[in-house]
Amino acid sequence: MLSAALLMALATAAAPAHAFIAYVSNEKSNTVSVIDTDSWTVTKTIKVGQRPRGIDFTRDGKFVMVAVGDDDTIQMIDAKTQAVVDSLPSGPDPELFAQDAAGKTLYVANENDNTVTVIDLEKRARLGDIQVGVEPEGMTISPDGKTLINTSETTNMAHFIDTNSRQIVANVLVDARPRFAEFKHDASEVWVSSEIGGTVSIIDPGKHEVIGKVNFEIPGLRKEAIQPVGIGMTKDDKTAFVALGPANRIAVVDVATRKVTKYLLVGQRVWHMAFTPDEKYLLTTNGVSNDVSVIDVAAQKVIKTIQVGELPWGITIAP
Image (cartoon, rainbow, N blue to C red; front, top):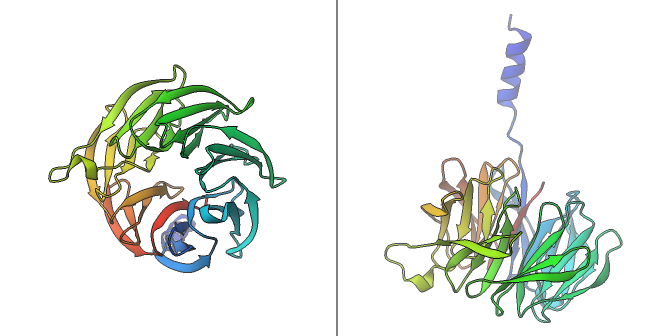
């Protein structure tokens, strides 16, 4: 007779892996593709507003927020019904956004009027605007929620904003066309990608100074083709993944040395990325090839390609 422990082990081994649900914003087809990470297939395509880009789950996992730039709003998708059920007020041409840890306040970069809109997520009401540089895009918030970072593409700056006073406390000059910002989980550094500059600037958030840079070099590719955009960092802050746009590669970076250890060939014009919550996989959006690459994080290897809508831009995965 099998022991109870053995029976339990066999049952656990036979149990299917927990599938996470990914949502991909398709900028040109005005849709959101829903991906099941168990089967690696698109299970639904949701029609949304015009030019969807920034996308993220609310902290409670009940809604997916998507910035529909040409409609000047943030639409909310019910995660259960997978249908658009509401919208949030933003400024003109919202692109990326960040929310506080409690999921109560949302900060939205509005590309066309050089502002960051502050939204009360519980009341779904606009609280005000913060004036920033020209063409704001990248958005991230410090782990303690006290500092908001916004990058302005044309001003070439990372703006440090006090979330209590909603005032800019520092402006840090980075390389040309900053697109994305990411805090290390221990809050010791902010990484900012510069698309035209071809670098990632590393900023000390206490001193508001650039303390280092990550540079990229791929044999056979011109420097101009290497355009860093999205950044993903593992929870242990040891490895960063950087999307290199038309270089069609993800750079794997050792965070301690700030050196690239590997380049992973993915789809065409890789833009943004998201980890599954267990950090086993990293999914990237490839705008020109209209697909998503699935990377095995431990093996640092692309294992799957999934076709989605036209010009996939952003991605978020259920918490």
